[in-house]
Structure formats: structure tokens, C-alpha cells
Length: 87
Image (cartoon, rainbow, N blue to C red; front, side):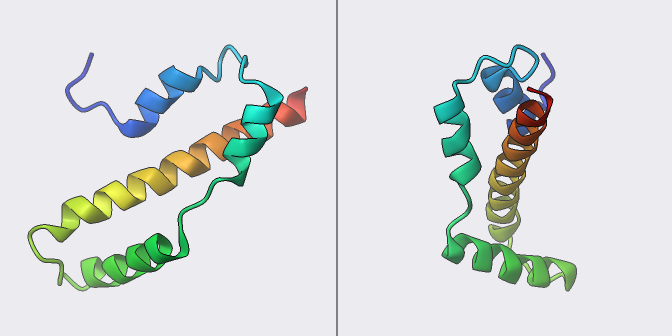
């Protein structure tokens, strides 16, 4: 296994979209999830700072964590939507 495994890859192995055995109720709950408004605002603020080169040494890691969670939620939602559309 690669040392550069992403959170999305780990989630994919955990949820196992190729098997499609997630219960409908669990799928609905995943589709309901989203970042909290405060986290969404923090991502916007950090994104603006990052594009201007103004992040402190600790902030890039925090920003990456926020983005990874958001990306993972979107990945899960997209997978569930595609799975439901094909059922």
C-alpha cells in the first residue's frame, strides 16, 4: 500500500462502492451530511488566504483537513447518487 493514501481512498475501501451493500437508510443519512456553516466559512477564509500566499505555517494542514473532509462527503454523495440512479 502506498504511503500517500488519501482519505478518499480509505473511505472507498470502507464503503466499498463496487459491492453496493450500504443499506438504503444509511445511504440517506450520508446524503444528508454536510460541513457545518462555520467550517464552510473557515474553508472560504483559508482558501482566500492560500490564494494570496498568506497562510501561517499551521494553516495549510488545517486547510487540507477541511478540504479532504468536504471532498470525501462529496465523493460519498456522488457515489450514492449514481448507485441510486442505476437501481
